[in-house]
Amino acid sequence: MFLRAWRFITLMLAALTMGTAYAHVLELPAKMNYDAALWTTINQSLYWGFGHIGGLIEGITVFVATPALTFFVRKRQPAFRWTLVGTICFALAFFVVFLMFTEPMNREIFQWTIQSVPTDWTQVRSQWEYSHAARFVLQLIGLCALQISILVETPIERSHHPVMPEVAQLTRR
View 1 (cartoon, rainbow, N blue to C red):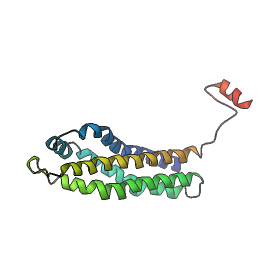
View 2: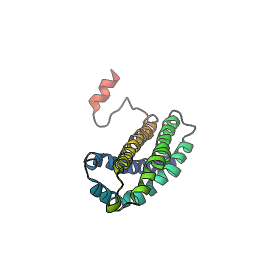
View 3: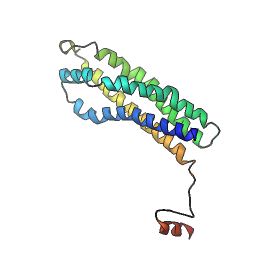
């Protein structure tokens, strides 16, 4: 029962973590057309919850939930391998993409004022926007791997199908 609960919590945290990066991906096409003033204003005002609330959830996901789940299933093959893949993807999204590409741009953007946006601001914008897209891809792969780790342990009932008995009959033939 403990493992089921931990898996559920981990999946929810991973989905919430991925959700913030997915939101950035959905916004990306429109934001790439904004001028410097609008893009800067949005980035300095809209994302408080992404950083503070989403950041806390991501931290729990990356530092606690996924590594602990990997430890808990270490003797359960093939679930362990899929869980490890998921854990690695979330770690790469944070330790490589966020810390090396996104966070440096966050620090730079928050130094700007509307009057002091640098002339190379589009390079900063591109790195910030596309790093979120990369994080989303890694987190999506990670979430899928965590879900597969559960599916590979779920037995397939072939003799009885509670919803569609005709399906059960077809599988017996």
